[in-house]
Image (tube, rainbow, N blue to C red; front, side, top):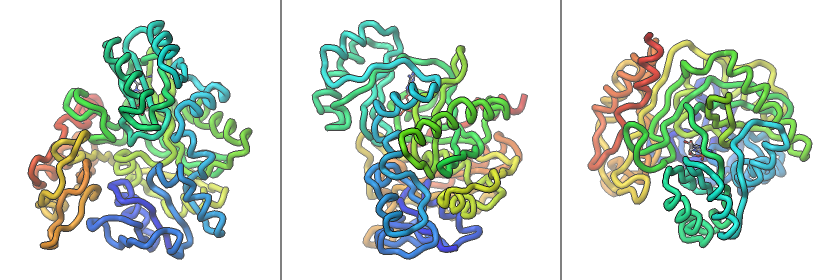
Length: 410
Ligand code: AMP
């Protein structure tokens, strides 16, 4: 099978790596750290299957364009991608589907938004309606900060038009888990659960980022909880999409908080999470290309299977991330990192300089992964591999999977 993967980050590198076990893969536009990257757009490449990685091309209708040309595509059309493209629309759909989620209000004007905010209790949660590269969410204990965020969002000062409609949500408390499901329009099958780390610094401090690390499996997600999430969240959502005439073929990524009142949906993403993908997909023991091709064709036959081995990924980010990452610093040590048993490195924000060296070119630069019989072993290998990598100003969290590795050992 020939597969085109669309995207240029660590997620696409991991997808290409695992699809490459059974298929011939080209990545567009890819990056210099990913083999078989090409600048040619997907619409100009011939393949048996097209897998679209990031949310932006999905929201922009790339899947529709390719399907209109008769191609087999894994990824929702623009209609389904609204789940991620508009938080207000997603919340409406969740309510319609009867899915448990945080109470909310949607606003385009400041006065009613501030009035609503005054009725809430901390933590206050303000979200842009539109896409903001995973950064459009403020969670704060401070009413002043929340009120300021409302002003900055609605005026367009903070996120341009993405923030000019906003959602204010009830603040939920509890551990977060990500459940990724592969959907063929009718049926959904679960992938192994993962947990990611959104904050920039250790102990979940600092700014929200696209994600600083992840691990899989997740000890707090039992098989029973996974079944519940599929039955009470993912399947009703797929049914609500169908009622709207949306044939959803792609990833439904459920971001859940396990609250004292049971699991509640925080958000849906319409693609593999980045960096969750990097720890979930390599654990597959069944054929990823076959699974995605079946989903794209509307008929998943078998549920995917996974190794018992754990995976941990640690993001190496550029100095200044997530606000203004510094670029152009030479990266060394990738080969040494890969030489460590169980380690792998996926390339994200990288390019080559005029001397042909690999240099930093974005906020999240590399995903350094460790794999092993337990989370603890996987975690040690990931950090040992990280210790081989260097570039000026490199930022990493030191506590990725630390708690879970401890829990799993008890
Ligand atoms: P989202 O992009 O909606 O997943 O939000 C990013 C992060 O903000 C989540 O991973 C949570 O850590 C946090 N968050 C979002 N919604 C809520 C909420 N209702 N209550 C508490 N934290 C939240």
